[in-house]
Image 1 (cartoon, one colour):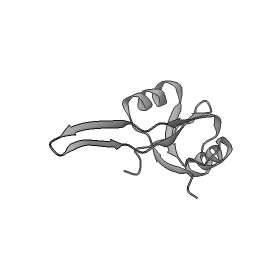
Image 2 (cartoon, helix red, strand yellow):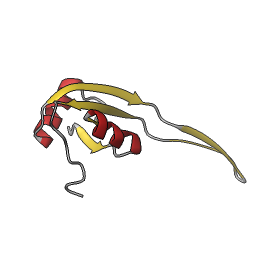
Image 3 (tube, helix red, strand yellow):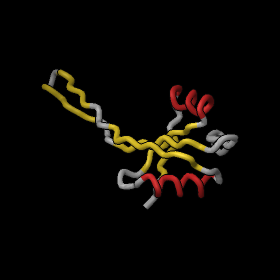
Length: 96
């Protein structure tokens, strides 16, 4: 089971990483905070102080088309915000 799926690179997450040394990741839905901490430390070689997680709900949309009402939704996922120790950082753009 892969714990870390991908980093979240949005304007809000990038600003948080520059100001507060916190990085956001999409993680496996069944992963707990201890597993996420170990995965980040082994993947990036940093020491993690704190892990905060949240389950992101799916967005639901209803569209009215010629053929009738079409409903759809996005996938739900789990997000982890990882606080690193002072002076450490992760370069997410290194291997693009």
